[in-house]
Length: 146
Image 1 (cartoon, rainbow, N blue to C red):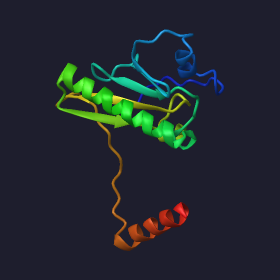
Image 2: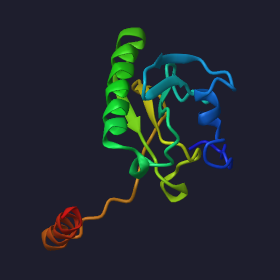
Image 3: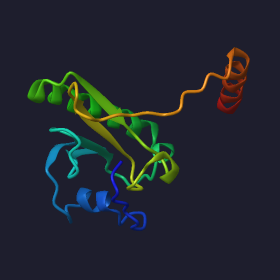
């Protein structure tokens, strides 16, 4: 993960400033709710960030309309990457909070064109707690939805 961390206050973060045109960015797409622009720390050629235009710190702060718009823009960026760079795959990455790996506290989604042997890896310690425990987790989530 990148070492850069933006510690700006809400509404003054680097992405808010890009949305307002106060900082330069290589914009790829813009609509009423989203802005797609090139990540200055390219993981692979064509690495794009899709951000909500309104400042929302995390996924939990987006409206349903914004969440849908971000995913639609991400799909368009993935289609563009496929046409422009012919990747072997595409990875979407979205992090929430410092513990989740978020370095800019403004909702954004990474769209990364992937090529076999590109050196990018995502690893975590897999746990298999058993069917009963997993069923309990599912119950907790269902209860939280009600």
